Image (cartoon, rainbow, N blue to C red):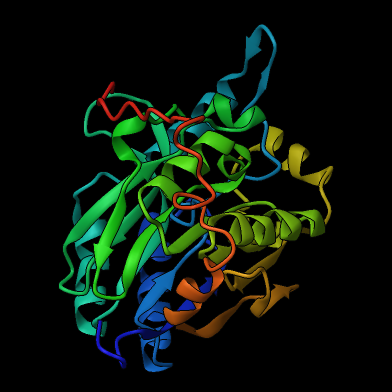
Length: 312
């Protein structure tokens, strides 16, 4: 890289979905991409499951041994608003990225053109608007397993770009030591962590990942309230939501240095965009005394095998 290219401005967008509405959420994202680019960002990151929603608080009418008809209909609505890759929805995002001239990483709920399985996916675009790759969440957490399938090792990219090596894991995948190690092994520099976890203790995880990986961490969450949900989901879903607080997810997005220091955020209790200017020389400096895949790796003792075979 040239000296100027070694510094890059990034943006983490803490935003809510237009719940269960793919087209409206994509259009909201398009506007925010333009705003982030106007703020000088070269890389723009959005939260987990932004399009069409992270359906926090909903049971989909499921208990052990029983599923309700209303729950099935809500799932059908969710599936019908999911994102096929490629499709008009990804074309629209690609157009916005091309006009803004940025790299984009955005959380979508993905479905194959045929079938009824959904995946929680992190989708990457280059500044020419082309899809560069995707990562499907390897292990949905707890009740997420009711609505999302599992990814495999074929979607674990670390992308070589002009602004650095970009990759990421989604939410509690970041608690999986070997998943993190696989990204470190690929030389990740800009580590993206879209999430739905707004707990204060999540910040300790994000700072640990930065320190462990000696990488920049871009942690991105939504700000979501009950009033954002459609009112026509049905009585079961509305009953589920009655049990929840008004603020369902308060955010906590942040940008963290390779030595674990906050460069921006954490942002709580509202939507907004965080910006930070990242200096790639900070990566080299941080690895002086710890390099997870170099002088601190001990490959004579430890080995990691990543099966990147496509299973689905």
